[in-house]
Length: 115
Length: 363
Image (cartoon, rainbow over all chains, first blue to last red; front, side, top):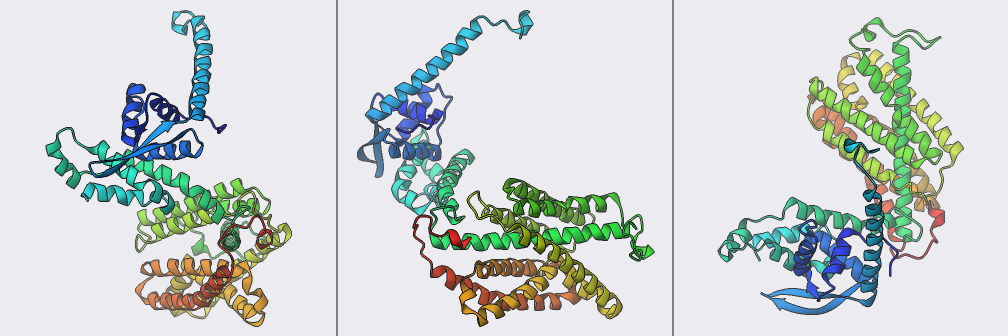
């Protein structure tokens, strides 16, 4: 597994493959749904990340189908991809906890706090 | 195949061939699905008149840049690069250094000229009064002359190993030249609009060439490079004084025509290139062992650039000087041809396959 930080698109692509193998355009739709429309993957970005994730062994091709005369290649999460996603989710959760704890004792300057 | 698909495949041509072989069909399928309209009746219209969005194109461009970078780094001759790329990188470095040297030398001559016009050079006869009119020696002239010294900073930074300073200083030099061209155009002093794109193109090429001075590139010999700058300033001064003196005093009637062809930048580069390349050609003709030198490629690159510059700036010359300009182009082409053949033969003899770091001596 690579030590490189997991980018936001890679994080959501890994998350999109947890439930089931998906093909390229299905990943785009799933990522948009998971991120509540915040991450809209472009095709160039998607395949740049897929290429890297396959290279790092975090995902792998599952099967190929022909749909309306065109190739659809499905990808699935590997064990190491699942571990990577879990580690990244834990890291992000820990970061969020730290920020939330600090924010609980913070009062905005407009309400008389230190700002 | 719809026009939309054809357009998207055209964009994908930016990607390396090996990448396209593996991913193109999938990318096209996913893209076309993403473009499919909700109403199937619109699909024919989208297929005919639809275009990949700017953000879609930008994502492919960004991917192409990321994928091409390792190959570009190899071509710049980083450790592990194939001998052929290492040798071409060495040639590019010499060409870039020679161009910086040229710019720096003329920037110093420009500074000397300005100081002379301002009467700040002791023990030298003062400039004629008509050359020192306030309209000629104005704030803009002084500013451009001083900004042009960025080339000197770039050259010295390169010699002493400060690559980033060198690159950014060269950017200032290019920007100054571009501003100068825009100023000439705005003031109506330019005969055509070709000088500006030519300056941008050749300035851009120089900035790209300077990337060949990467962190693993061999250090430049400091003493020899500084001596080259001294000699360059001497040659540039002699060139300007000689051409000006000869043309002013001996060829008065022809002065303006010849000056225009000889002293615009393309003319200066042409004359200096031929003066430097001819002795080199003689040397490699006499001593075949020198034919593998990176200077063959460096001269070939410089000659090609000068030839291009001379040709595109012919329209800048007054009609009486175009013949002289064409003659310059022909001479440069005549010098360019054997240099290009020599460089090609040298590079073809070297392997394009990586063989570890065995090419260290080529730098």
